[in-house]
Length: 197
Image 1 (tube, rainbow, N blue to C red):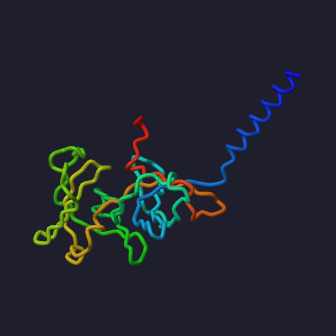
Image 2 (cartoon, rainbow, N blue to C red; image 1 turned 45 degrees about the vertical axis):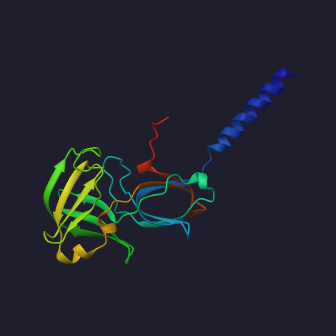
Image 3 (cartoon, one colour; image 1 turned 135 degrees about the horizontal axis):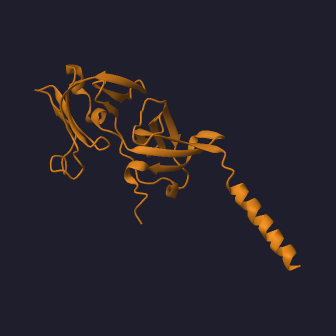
C-alpha cells in the first residue's frame, strides 16, 4: 500500500511539473518608445539581435496591453525616441511617433568621451539631452556605451522635442501565442537588478 501511494504521488508530481513547463508563448525585448497608463498600453521597438551587449533596435514596432495584475508589471518605464547610437556609421536610429517607424538620422560626432560611468562628475546629477541651437549640436549620455556624446544635426532636427534624443528603458515582455498583443508579464530590464537580494 505504501509503495502504491508513493508511486501515485510521484506520478502526480511529475505530471504537474510537466504541465507547468508547457508554456505556449514567447518573449520580446526592446526599447520603450511609448507608455500610456490610461489606455494601459506599452510600445517597444524590438531588439533583433537578442544580444545584451550588442542590441540592435531595428525590429518591428509592437504595442502591448499591460498585464491584468499590477504585480506583473515592474517599474514604470521611461520612454524615449533614441534607439541606438552608431559611432562607426555616424548615425542615430530614432523612433518617429508620427509615422510609428524607425528612422536613421546622419549626424557628425564632434566629441565622444568614453568610459564615463553614471556616477562620473560630468554626468551625475545632470539632465540630458542638452540641445545647443547656437552650435547646432546635441549632447547625450549613453549609459549602455558609457559615453558622453556631442554631435551636430541638420538644423530642422534641433526643433525636435527632447524625447527624440532620450533613450527609453529596455523592456522584456512575455505573452501567450493565443494573444500576442496581451502582455502576461513585463520586466523593466533597465530598472531591475536581478542580482540584488
